[in-house]
Amino acid sequence: MGDITDNPRLRERTFVFEDRHDAGRQLGALVQTLLPVRDPLVLAIPAGGVPVGREVAAALGAPLSLAVVRKIRIPGSTESGFGAVTWDGQVLINEPLRAALGLSAAEVDAAVAETRANVSERIALFTKGMPAPVMEGKIVILTDDGLASGFTMLAAIQGVSRRNPARLIVAVPTASASSAALVSRHADHLVCPNIRSGRTFAVADAYREWYDLDDREVLEELAGVP
Image (cartoon, rainbow, N blue to C red; front, side):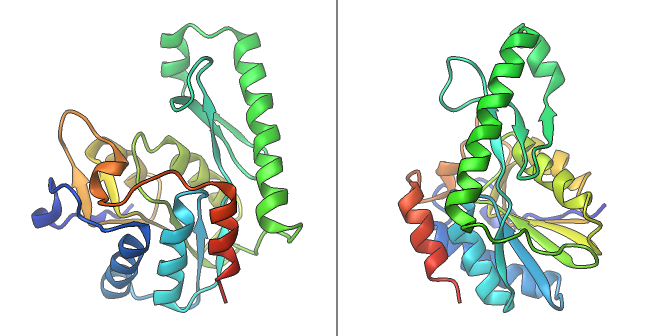
């Protein structure tokens, strides 16, 4: 497994990127330089990964599609998750975290069912019934706006790997050191210019302009894709 990461000058700086589009442009240029590829397929994880993926795809002259993955939220939390569900309904549970939280089987089942329903709704909304792209034998580039725990990306990697790509590259603008190490073990290559090793990490810290994209904005981003 490869790990192509890390410009030391960018490692701990705040506001490395102006916004997600700027991050995607920088990331696309870095992929071009480090991993020149022919005929790749870029898969963006919505919502925040879509503007990043749009710019990466534009830089590489590649088609852009979606890898709809949603974290399975911890009951009572709006942000934290203990697993993820992929676009094809597969479930990945962070078992050590689930055990530490003391979640019952019924709580896990309920959270998984809710997340599966949400994934189905987002697929219908964002793809308008278009089939998933062919990944077998392709160079697939998975992208998001950053990696916090890395668990959502890990689920996406497993979803793509089941479709036998020729090579799987993860390209993200920023990541925690622990998530970069986790993801790099499961992808052929990881491209990440800003890896942070501080005691706390938030993807937003790398961006001057940061907010959560809503569904309307995601659709607007996708409408601008050639």
